[in-house]
Image 1 (tube, one colour):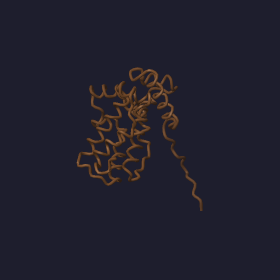
Image 2 (image 1 turned 60 degrees about the vertical axis):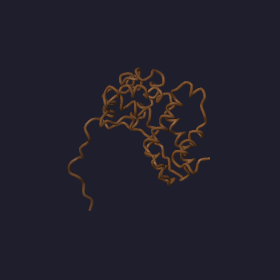
Image 3 (image 1 turned 120 degrees about the vertical axis):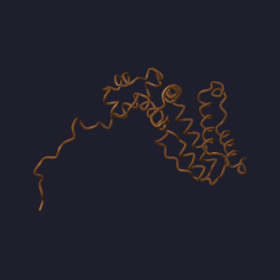
Image 4 (image 1 turned 90 degrees about the vertical axis):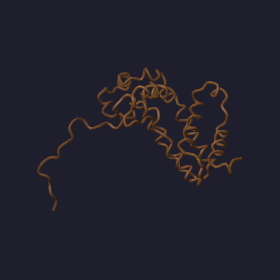
Length: 196
């Protein structure tokens, strides 16, 4: 026997969420960061350019900074990087992703602005740049079975600094050394016996 509901189901209040809004807003934010920089990437301008309204944007991102972070760095977190166990190969892949993700026009515009903004006010839960490749680095070190004898977080921070230097320091940008050199330096720190 098939039972029929005697009362109609209640529809959620308001219009259903449009899944395309996030994509449109994030794409618009990236474009604005590249064209107008951090200061010119306001929620009002994002709304105007994307055809969305400001409340719809704030329903999805609690702050302008959260929106800019996601737009500039989400490619880093949506990366599936499975370690192979080969430290050299895995570090090279990770550094390439890092440099590619942080070297986009949107990320280059966002990083200095976010750093300055978070000097003035701490982000929620004292956390900024939640989009990090740090978990991938941990997995690579673990898969390679190396014990560096150093704090792995500090090694990651050194690597992060090198990549930022390659992106932001004009002299470094003009005279890029191959990523292979950076990989070899990291291997000397992580697993000295395996360096070339």
